[in-house]
Amino acid sequence: MADPADSKTGLAAVAEAAAQAPGRGLPPVHLWNPPHCGEIDILIRRDGTWLHDSSPIGRPELVRLFSTVLRKDPDGYCLVTPVEKLGIRVEDLPFRAVALTAEEDLLRFTTDVGDMVEAGADHPIRVDTDPVTGEPGPALHVRADLWARIVRPVFYELVELAAVEEGRLVVRSGGQAFPLGPVGAGVA
Image (tube, rainbow, N blue to C red):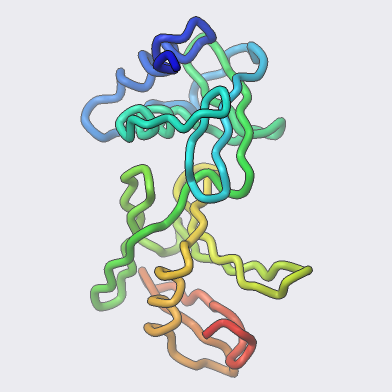
């Protein structure tokens, strides 16, 4: 398969725009208002794998680069540059919180694309419950309207750190309290 960055479908432009961000900073995608140019065959699977034309994008650097120009608009997820907007598909949430470091009153997460996020007022933790299975669906706010699914082993670490407050498991970070769920409800 050809490298997606070399494709004539707009990915080369997306990669070029993303590469303009200095260091590990993020391009100002919130300031860009390009026309919608259609859909591109990129899917972010539930497990965090990025696919192009049904094949995994094998270069982590390229996935990281694309993640920096990812945005969620009212019409869905898209990759944006100053001159074009390409819709993509996301099965669950676009990122995975794959590592946790706990220090005093701070919980620091690392995502599968290399973002470092400190839970707090600007980056809350939420736990939704699947209405069919009853399973918890923990998530962490990363930026704008982009969230990371907290993977099961990291969620178990959070549960171990939690205190019981008013019948709920609660973790604290950055001066904020985040409920993980009721005690004895299958969270632990």
